[in-house]
Image 1 (cartoon, rainbow, N blue to C red):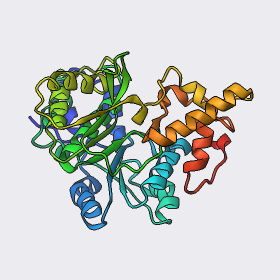
Image 2 (image 1 turned 90 degrees about the vertical axis):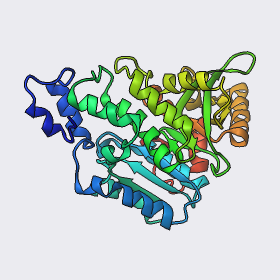
Image 3 (image 1 turned 120 degrees about the horizontal axis):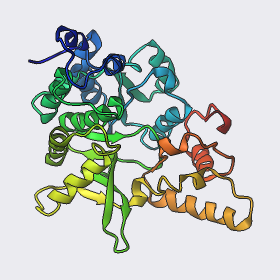
Length: 338
């Protein structure tokens, strides 16, 4: 039986396995599981934006949280995107941002002519005729345990795949500083780490650049549905793309490129704190200058590892502080507000 809203779950007694009252509340709070006027217009709104507005690049982000938690650092990710990709379009897949509150947040960019739109996704339409459809039905029917990892995180992992498969374009996490134009990239994924021989050891899904209906994206969706584990952090995200690429790379049947860590992940999450610090000694200051020159030359975007870095203050003169000053378009807040 197909369940099309969280309200349908209440018809079952006892409650389906894995859907606790707390999980049910969290499902409802995402605003993504119920059909609404906004979600019913999802496909037509996306096509109107991408097909009628001459977008140089089609960007997507997801935001499965309250609009009030979309902060200055997330907003700066949008600023830096449009600084280097001013004629591109960005769709934020979010029910909370597709609101009066969200409109207010995005207005400073929209009023300057940048094409950014928050749209409530229709998961049933988005996952239709892909393996994601069965996964969603199993979650809603209680036939699959959503696990202990917040479902919003795993939904984001799946939504990014589904939207790229259906429309093509670029998916980005919201904790990036974008440094370059993305229009030259096609069918690309970034390595998070490499070994001493330059072979990748871990890929990441914080940036995905793929054509519509690309077979590798379908393989990612298939893997998500078949091997989903909601209890291991990263299993359905970075670990998933690493598993699948490791398998399919041996077949040579897929057309895609793996870029080195400097493209999107120039600093590991264990060392990201160094990018937030101001160095007052000559050696440290020289390192900052050299690092910024290198980043501006070879890096498309700096992943900030927000899960780790959100607690760090951005110091004046730090690498992150300098990049923010170079890549803002509104520059409305000082570093203390970020």
